[in-house]
Length: 307
Image (cartoon, rainbow, N blue to C red):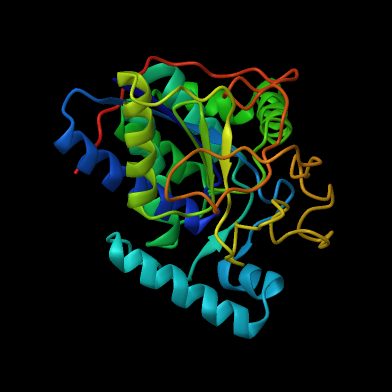
């Protein structure tokens, strides 16, 4: 069985880093029990702060959270990080993540999803563990070189206005297609998981897809949306607008592509997770083929889970 997974994330979101590790754990466990299963994981862009200028990371956090919420936020991500081998540190500079997404897309197009996952891991670790700056092109070039990308190809991508517009279009199309916050994970083209989740959630979804493939359960005809956890934290919002909502200094466009559509009818599937569903956003695009003028960066597939 082949399971496709599409992850919308932003390099500024620590919960997206945690989701990466949680999903990898789930895939590894499931692959151990079901060696016939193959996973294909693709990372797609999302911009929490499209117009954010370079700023001290802690200063940014204090601008979007009260001191009490900031303490809770740091405590929560550090505790979750400990479970996944991540040592979150709040230091260094941050800023707009556009060039990170350009690099991630170039890696997928040139080298495929395994190399793309390695670049995503390096960017997350560098930014959240070592305080490296996502706007520092010299660092991004070193990350790209580590997987075999040519420096000229990376520089061309960083400077290309057309690719910049493509990035914006893809983020807008993702929002129109149902991505309302990050992390957002589309599993098997059928289940959209919003917000950070523990590995068991993904393993249950893999079981559901396995049952469908074996004919023991009828296949789903619509995408099911699993609700975000009730967690107010950087990069994650139940309304999908992100913590930048209402702060023109952080984002004078009001949140590029981060708008909420009117919900459609609730769609549920049988099982113990009934009750964590939220209204399903209807319409095209929920199967991963996002509507609108967005161009995609396709690449060869198949990523096996790591330990």
